[in-house]
Length: 167
Image 1 (cartoon, rainbow, N blue to C red):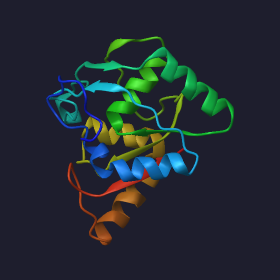
Image 2 (tube, rainbow, N blue to C red):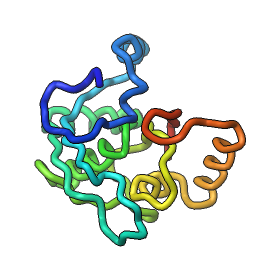
Image 3 (cartoon, rainbow, N blue to C red):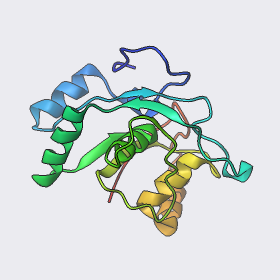
Image 4 (cartoon, helix red, strand yellow):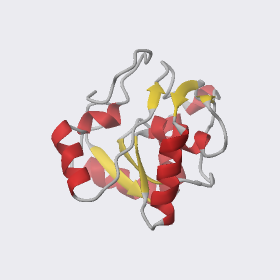
């Protein structure tokens, strides 16, 4: 992706594939704050929930300076939008005092402390990524969104269409 500057991931954080340097410039020019984190996306980041396995631990780095800026942004009335489910896990882990690795499993009922939305792709059914999306939307709204996407022939999975979800 345009963000990568450290080796280590075994998978692409696919939500970021929707972003270009021009889009980042436009976001900043419109007054949006853009921050970066380091992710080491794991090979089993989207496990099937039928396997009864939690997502694997993933390495991440969120600097204290970045966390402080995000807190100030939120306190000033801004909304923290994560680009991808792995970023959601990293930010919500960092705000809870975790660093280096996260094993945070976000499911419906989760109380978000920092993240107010996510840009993500349309995920496969019965996966941990979809559970995280359901934590934002709730079951009924999730079903409505996916039904709409199917009816309008949206593209799913890693190289498909993205969506912005806010709470």
